[in-house]
Image 1 (cartoon, rainbow, N blue to C red):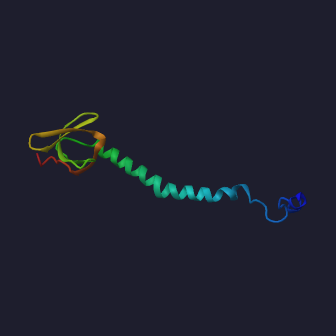
Image 2: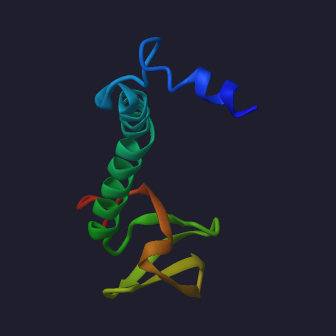
Image 3: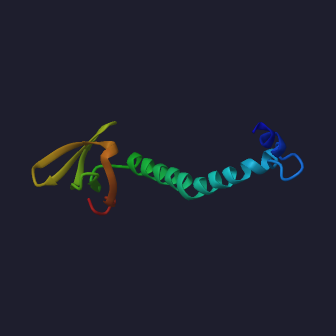
Length: 109
């Protein structure tokens, strides 16, 4: 019974197990594809969002991540005060601002 197992051997002459780098080459290629299609664009988008948050100023029209549209009336390091309707102001964290719809320019007032 065990003679059959010994007769099969380890496949030394027939086809081997490939090289060290050859076995990892598909993994390296898959990682490169993930990096260029997923990781790198996400890092670029996060960097742009960080720049937008750093450049916020009073009078900018913004949208929060919850969908509130408003005008910035006050800023601190972590909190943004938005006026969403006349005399209705809400405070949101700076990180929850998802975008700026229009910037206040010097000619607008």
